[in-house]
Amino acid sequence: MSSSSSSALSRLVNLQRHFNPKDSTPKGHDAAGLGHVKISPDVSEALSHGGAIVALESTIISHGMPYPKNLETAIEVEQIVRENGAVPATVAILDGVPCVGLSMEELERLAKLGKKARKTARRDIAYVGHSFDQRLGYLILDLVATRGNGATTVSATMFFASMVGIPVFVTGGIGGVHRYGEKTMDISSDLTELGRTPVTVISAGVKSILDIPRTLEYLETQGVCVAAYKTDEFPAFFTEKSGYKAPCRVDSPQDCARLIGKTGIVIAVPIPKEHSASGSLTESAIQRALKEARDKNITGNAETPFLLARQVLDIALVKNNALLGAKIATSLAQLREQGCNKGDADAE
Image (cartoon, rainbow, N blue to C red):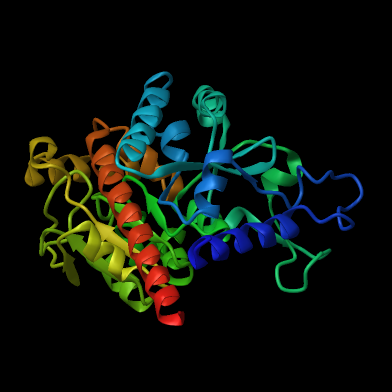
């Protein structure tokens, strides 16, 4: 067994020990609930062998579009990941259990739940005083305590992906500083999560409904590496260009993989040209939607789905990100395997 496989297996054993303590389950909770993370068999196998894995959020399934289109899209995105050499690991909370990797039945269940599944961000994670490990303790969600169902956003997906050792995560677009954020202080937890969690997020940049320059400034403050893929300009979700220069540029999956380390990273991927809307038309529509949102007194996290509902959700960008994400994950697995093989050869 290579050292990379041994390391991954060791992580899994430690995780199992943390999440399935034999003697530390509080009264009223079984080991499959509080303090438990369920990892699907294919994700577990890939982790144990140092394989390529791509984490996927579940909010887009429950809150992004109606059933059955959401299920069709989820299946298509997972298939793209598989076809490009990686294992998809959709993250969600079902019956109070955080799940990393969903079966077809679980995907369908989440899709049918739709907005009945709670939109779950990092802020929903709480530390419970009773602990079985001084360093980790019990990390649970409000949903875990209530046996509820939750669809994870970027920040919560990053948290669970990092917890089990998945460094690559694909989403549509990340959150950011909202327009007029200097007055409302409305800043997505995605940005602070990127500053403290070592996961690389592949997205179509920052959602164009947000304040892009302030978002880039905030990411810089958080120490997050931001790189645009095959372009010098930072993309803006539905449009290829935002008018703002990207801090750095990468031109291949291998370049992206070499960046991945112990910090949060954003790989911003422009939407394919054939699907990109005119920047000026999109901006005009956004301004109209923002005015309507303010007139209806819609603010905070309720504002984003309201605004996106005013546009046709172009799932092409999610598929495009999944394609690149799988290639990055595969390149990373190859780089790590090469590094381990070199280390083994040097040790002989």
